[in-house]
Image 1: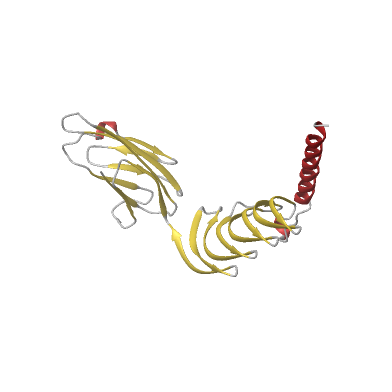
Image 2: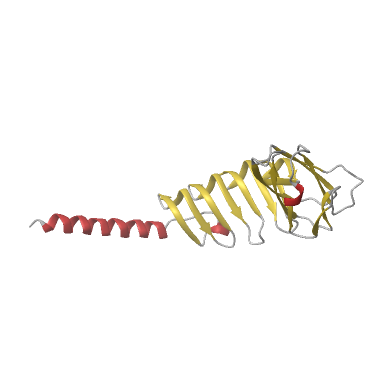
Length: 226
């Protein structure tokens, strides 16, 4: 007799799980381009809460009444994507739009799918370990196009140059006693700079890493400050 409550509870859980699975598969997304499949929260037969919807395109984020709402990332079939704020299926508020064809990123403010304000992202510092500041400027016209000049604001009493290593997604890195450059690069460009700073008395060694991306073509100057 003591087994019956256990069996009944297990049976109830199976029924509940089956109902939830059915409800999940029957949950609708009202945006046709992402309506083929859906997994996530559901309410009254419509996508609600966090979830992922797929079709020709794909969306991951928050839903309300079957439509993208609040924050989420929509990726088109061609690789473009919008990551930001939504209101009932339309881009609305702050967001980031990426264009796959030219690798450009635009940060802006949308109103009912219309871009109202924008700022093109020219570069991004991905990592700056054990350095105080990384500045990137596009204003030194003395530098040939496709060149990134690297400058260091580091105490001359500290040795680091011999440990300097450069990695480039295109072109090549070059270092001399007078300058450090990435040459003949194509944009968008991704670079990595690593070096070890040794104190005057060789007591403290500090490993430094700077990783960055530059999206817009032109001559650039980077200044790394310890």
